[in-house]
Amino acid sequence: MSVVTVQTTPFEGQKPGTSGLRKRVKVFSQQHYTENFVQAILSAIPTGAQGSTLVVGGDGRYFSKPAIQSIIRLAAGNGVAKLIIGQDGILSTPAVSHLIRKYKATGGILLTASHNPGGPDNDFGIKYNMENGGPAPESVTDRIFESTKTIREYRIVEGPEVDLSKIGSTSFGQLQIDIVDQVKDYVAYLATIFDFDLIKNFLHSSDFSVRFDALHGVTGPYGRALFVDAFGLPESSIQNCVPSEDFGGGHPDPNLTYAKSLVDAVEGENISFGAASDGDGDRNMIIGKGAFVNPSDSVAIIADWAQKAIPYFKGGIKGLARSMPTSGAIDRVAKKNGYECFEVPTGWKFFGNLMDAGRLSICGEESFGTGSDHIREKDGLWAVVAWLSIMAAANAEKAGTTVQDVLLQHYRTYGRNFFSRYDYEEVDSQGASDMVAHLRSQFTSADFVGTKLGQFEVAESGDFSYTDPIDGSVSKNQGLYATFKDGSRIIFRLSGTGSAGATIRLYVEKYSNDPSEFGADAQVGLKPLIDEALKISKLKEFTGRDKPTVIT
Ligand code: VG1
Ligand code: CO
Image (tube, rainbow, N blue to C red; front, side, top):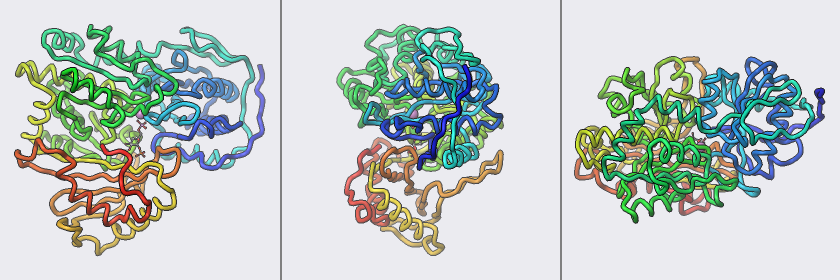
């Protein structure tokens, strides 16, 4: 089998966003489109593709199969030594991160559009992760993008389709291919992080009941391995756990809107604890009967309990972090305990350097992303098992403790950061960028500080810029924020993961240490702030939208 050079021409817009390149399947399936992008990735690997080992897998969404066959041909054409591929091409994002680290691979290619719907008319995505198991930093994604703009040819080895259904070693020309179990290594790793026996005992010795919903995404088999096989729970503890190429026609996005059937089950069937994960398994939602754990609170609570409840952290916490729009709940835990706390731009790629430098243990994003330095991606099931560990520890202290009790106990110690996000999806791109320009001119002007938006006086504002404390790299224009005298905040930014039009995100946060407010509905308390944000942004004028698509 010999290397063939294929002539091609560049495609516009192959710019990796917050988490890789995400486009409609129709875009990816154009001739040369996927090949161009994968060649650009291979060309951008810092240590070169030649002789490298890459982990390949994804959430199994529609178009994954042909994409993996292309990757195999391109990998062989570029002298890659070995591919480690999940059986049937399926691996969760956290599992890829773990495998890269475990097998000391050069990097990994992940095939997912995360929580975006799948199927022939929906989304596909490709991203590259580095040897630390984390998403490529901007220096590498910039190189990938540059290369997509000038590409004239790519190199492949032609050959028969590789059967990915059988675990074991095979080869494709000079390229070695190891097909591995999707679940085994990852679940074995979680078993070293948490005390599975303790969790199992708790679940069997109390009437605490659990329901996990994989939303037809990649975590189905992982959920089964954990809840049914490891913890010995009944079949009824899991739902939607058979992965499907189009996620059963739904949005595999764990929030109150798209995981409604879980919410209904928890309420209707009196279940103590509900959890869901997204298409590729890196996000999580935690609920209890009558309780929703806001992701910004979730990471703060995990950080607060970690040393006590999770064996992995027994030795101590190195530091905490959150993305900029995430509420400051975790900052309060850091302050009280004397931990360093970092504020990074949106997207998991910014946490990796801090973890590699030994300064970060636990971090999260408001977008249902929670994780730790056990890998370099956010990790949905890790967060779920972390919460089960907390519930076990809390119940050991006081039997009958509910998720709602844990929340209220946290608020009593730290106060409550009310938080909400409004998403305006697929708005006209021009309108969105005009709105951002309009906001930028105000938020970055010197006389904005001191002005009043209704009752709120601006204390600080700007366009968020981050200087990585480890490598000094600077990321600018990461979100327009205004912080008010009373400590509340509003933030606007454009999504970097959408595949059509623009998505505007509005984040609002307000702090209260008045116990009479702890049980309140976040939407009610935040309403005045949201009204001011909508007014100053002229969102309706610029976009024609008078309602968000999703509220979380
Ligand atoms: C969104 C979230 C961000 C998250 C990213 C990838 O990005 O806001 O917090 O890291 O998705 O998550 P954006 O640019 O659309 O706001 V996932 O689960 O899609 O890999
Ligand atoms: Co995801």
